[in-house]
Length: 130
Figure 1: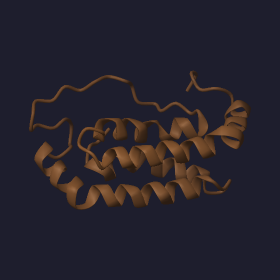
Figure 2: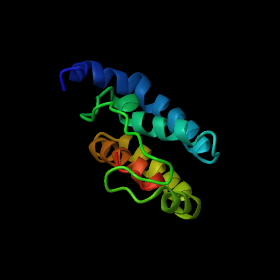
Figure 3: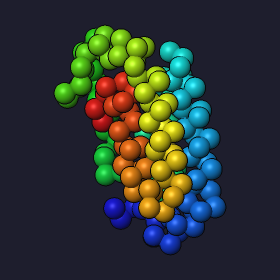
Figure 4: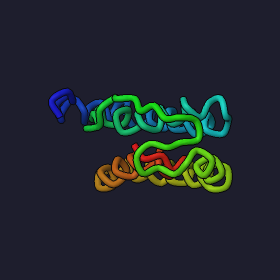
């Protein structure tokens, strides 16, 4: 994407800032997800993890979907199903996926896999398709 910095700038960012800053951001996001009030912030931070790691912008637009209470957008399940899923599975599965993604992204070979796994975090957390 044209808005992303050059590969050299992104590599320097990753080596000096991205790897440790992403760890902090993910820790804050996961703990925010454990609270009802912090859940929107946690999801937002999870969505920003690939950018924080490598300064690569996602191809998705920043359009906001408005959904009536209890409804869902796109192919996502209803809010009630997503809530039950989060309480039973989402909170611990997202923590596990965050750890695996982060550890993979710390290696040169695992970096592309780690970034790809970060893209699945919002869905694993709450079944919300972005």
